[in-house]
Amino acid sequence: MIKKRRLEYREVPTESIIAPDTKIRGTIIRSSSIRISGHVKGRINSDRLVILDKGGKIDGMINAPHIIINGELNGNIDSSEHVELRAECRMIGNINTGKIAIAEGSIFHGEIKMTKKKDLPSASESDKKFFKIKEKFDQGPPEVEDAKERLAGLQKLT
Image 1 (cartoon, helix red, strand yellow):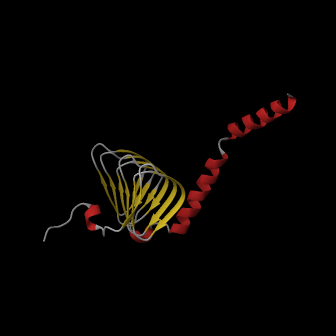
Image 2: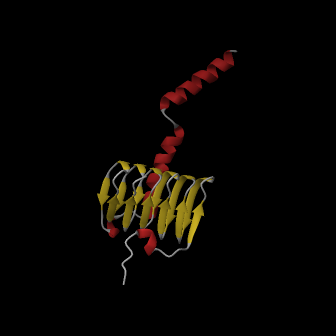
Image 3: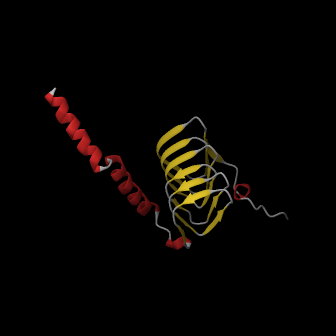
């Protein structure tokens, strides 16, 4: 019997696909695998495999047992099983996983925490952290708010 080494070959081929010209903002929740070739801004939860293709981009968090990153990820990963950062990967964020493989040529800036499945935060805990960070991000830095107030004051004078 031939052992299937690559993670994507071990998965059942039922998957959703986010095409290269597609942009999605929000939370994606899947019970099966998902392949992302487009741009997702938000959170991805899957019970199976998440693949970020070369040219694909995610600004947000991924929570799935198996994750393969070929594209650009700006956000954190929580994986109970296995994460692969392939050669074309560019990632800024932190990883919590049981197993990890990092290919030569990948770019990673962040922290890796090797954990057991039971030690990973639940989806609700991860959601709370994500939305707390998102709220701060959406507010913008204080100097932007000050500039907006000054601009509004100047507009009243004219």
